Image (cartoon, rainbow, N blue to C red; front, top):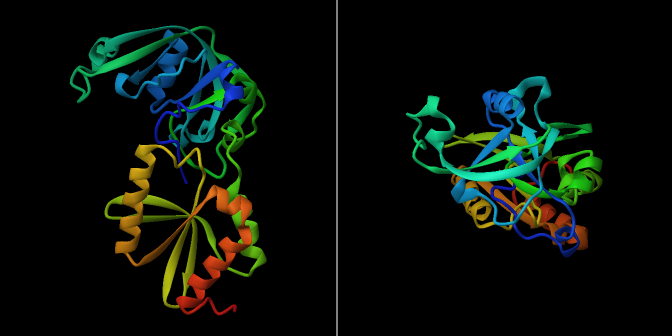
Length: 256
């Protein structure tokens, strides 16, 4: 599942009244050093959120090694200014985005969470909103964003009905790498089962990425089944029945 390809400005009513946290990604280790030494974080102006936020939390991706795939630190926002990228990072004046407008967020003391928020199993994390309460209590990314663990529900259900499915199956197609929520291999074909959580797959950018992924999979012989969160939660048996029918149509797995 691709996680939050764009800022989610649509918050629940109860969240609007709480202290909001924007989760940003530290893409490079040099960004981590800037954060600690100079106390600021940057983001492209055209992707900056409209919603106000009082805190910034920082996701460290897998490239950070043993400390990666988790959120460990956060800080209070002091002020936000608009600058060209070349003004913020004068040593990178030849960068393709050097003339692009950015938002520089100045921060207070960097604070460490009592317990890191893990991204397991790993999902692609981009920007997103949460509350300070959830930041301090969430154990994983799903809890932080209040996303139902639909993949866990599906994995148990597939096992229960006897369908062999490989979770988080990674594949390269046309020079791009994709992660499938579940891959089901049959005698006459293969099925990609995608669990589309409401918050993760409602933005226009993510919907566009989903369409590109669908086309790439279909061109390479995959049957794509996208199951909305509401169907998984409200009618799991119907979801399982649909998958079973596809499996049987593709010659079965030798288990039915």
